[in-house]
Length: 264
Ligand code: ADP
Image: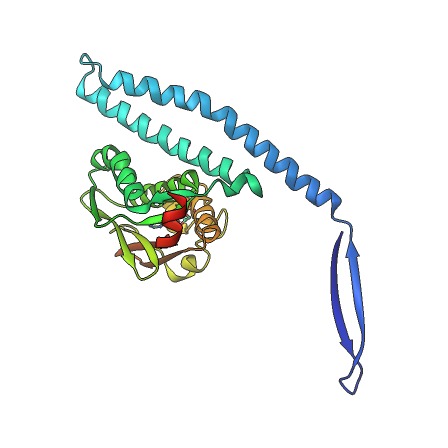
C-alpha cells in the first residue's frame, strides 16, 4: 500500500486537518517484478548466442584466406555484435534490484581497472580510427564491486568511442585528488547540449543528436553507471560542449590506510 498525505488550512491560514490517501499498489509492484524477471531472462538468453557469434567471428578474423574487403566487413559485424553485447549487459544490470545489484566489495586498484579497460578497448579504438590515450600514475586503492565498476568504465569508454569521429582522441586518466580516486574519460566527439545534459543520467534518455546520427544505444548505461558510483559513496559527473566533446568524471572514495591493513 502506498500512503500519501497533505495538510490543509482554514481561511486564517491555521492548519485545519490532514488528508491521507492510501492506494493499493500490489498490481503495480507485481508488474514491475514481472518486467524485471522478463528482462533478466531475456538478456540471459541473448548472451549465449551472442558470445558464440563473437567467438566464431574472432576465429574467422585469423583466417589468412579472407580478402581485405571480407575482413573489413567482418570487423563491422564484430563491432555491432559487441554493441549488442553491451546493450544486453545494460538491460541485465537494469533488471537486477536490491542485493543482486550491490555486489561484493573487495580491495581493488582503480588505476589497474582503468588500464585493463584501455587494453580491452584498444582494438575497437584502432578499428574506428580513434586514438586511445592512457594516463595513470600511482595505484588508487578503493573498496568496490569489480563487476559493477568494470561495467561503469566499459560504458564510459564505449560511449566515448561510439560518439566520436575517426581521427579524434579519447583520453583516459586515473589520478588521486584528495580523498578521491578519480577516473576521467574525455572525448572530442559529438558533445551534449545543455537540455540533454540535465537528463543525461535518466534511464532510457538519449539525445536527439545521437538518435539522428543513427548511433545504437539503450539510454541505460549512464543511469546504471551513476547508480553504481553512488552505491560506492562516489559520484559520476559530466561536462560537455556540442561539437567540442565531453568529459565524464568518476570519483570513488580512496581506501584509507587503516582499512588497507585490515582488509588486504
Ligand atoms: P546509450 O546506450 O544510448 O549510449 P547511455 O546511458 O550510455 O546510453 O547514454 C545516454 C545518452 O547520453 C546517449 O544516448 C547519448 O545521447 C548521450 N551520451 C553519452 N555519452 C556520450 C558521449 N561521450 N558523447 C556524446 N553523447 C553522449
